[in-house]
Length: 196
Image 1 (spheres, rainbow, N blue to C red):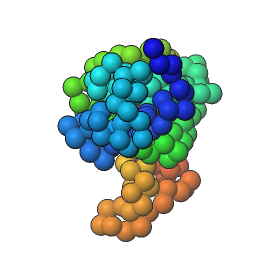
Image 2: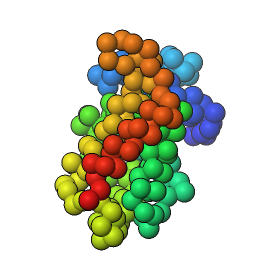
Image 3: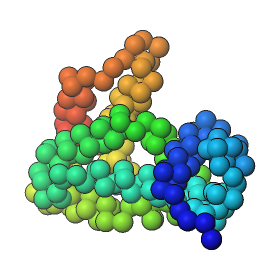
């Protein structure tokens, strides 16, 4: 049996992410991936049982990296303002430094693999964030609302700004680069919307 080569495995993951973003799940295939990587198709099957396994594993790995980054220097005991600010910092850093992985994650989270990927990658994250919100509500730092409304208000503005930043333009095609001032202005509006 052939052994795993970590350098080849990383190359396979990187090329798979690039191809998934460019071609979508339907256009993605193991034969094309092997050709892009300069390896035989048999080599791919050392790492993955099939195309579905590869897609799921890549999605879970990106998700785990993303959610681990979200809880870096974060505690559910932080004040709402401090904790949300840390979430914004962590999310912005990940999105800006890993735009291809984020694009792949978005694609996979809108696919039939969503439930599997979310379940396997979120682990403790949802409990940590649940405790954070519960603590903030109990301290009367956060209004009580549904998770969907909370997420839309708390993170929607940030992700819109990050999308403009990654595309290099905002509405109407005007050039855009995310600045500290734009981030802080949006953050303050979010705080106003979510605090009693």
